[in-house]
Image (tube, rainbow, N blue to C red; front, side):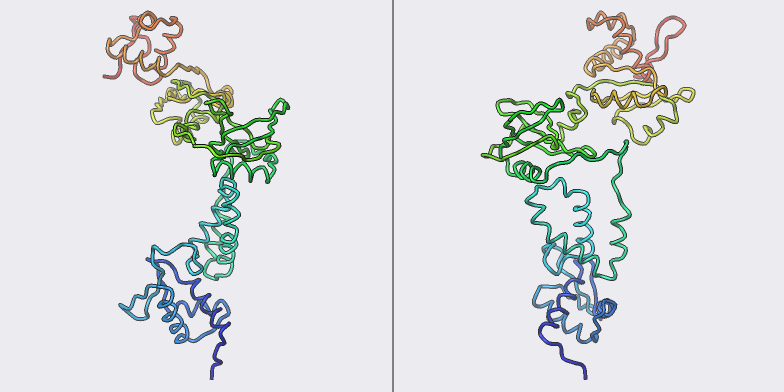
Length: 377
């Protein structure tokens, strides 16, 4: 005769069962659960497992599908994801990926509150014999660098906690900051955003008394203390700050860029273009590229990185290019002299504008009559 489990054993069995019930639309039945528990070293008869499932479904609101036998069980789709029973394989994998990739971008207070969930997720994937593929996934994915890897600068964890919590709570920061030159100063800033750029972290903020934003490297903050709160400015957008090229040492000025690049060196631009309006022409093994981009120091570094593989680099302010393009299309004439007179710019600048139009396939090269044809309507 089988030994009747005591109360502690019954609780242990119930917890193991609850851990294995998935959320709808997935489900599990008694025989499958019985097999999983046996693989986990817990041998119980099918009828015992079914009695547990019946009792637990009534107590915890677990869904029971009785349309066919064996009955199928699942947690409601809207149930809280981190209740004891609902930390499924998918939940655990998502949590551990978040810990792996996003932990440094979460406020310190949230990280601390999540520690128990991270531990539970690690236990769930480690304890469940049917989670082998989920455990392997963590070693199958990685975010890699697209440039020479660098060792991350040291950031004081206590300072990071203060800064991230102040950012989360909209509180002013009193800081001691060291500039790249080595000069130290006491500053008071309004924290507005946190950005990770490869191994570096930057705090986007406004100095007290100013309305422009700047980026401060977290590893140069020597001390930090949060003070009183503030109303977050509605006109600030971290996304727009990035789009404007501010993390690339630009000021948001858009240009029309044109260059020639060796086919092998530039083939990646066919798959990952510089902009949505990028144009590409293949001329005798050279790619002629035009694109609307933000002018920034990082753009110049990127262009110089191709060395002799890239030539004929031209950059024209976007507003100038668009105005000149409208003028050329309306007059059906691509004359540098006419553009120079119309917009009050030098002949050389006007000629550069026309050459970018040629690179984009809008106007032809100079014909035998000394003029260019308009190739688009």
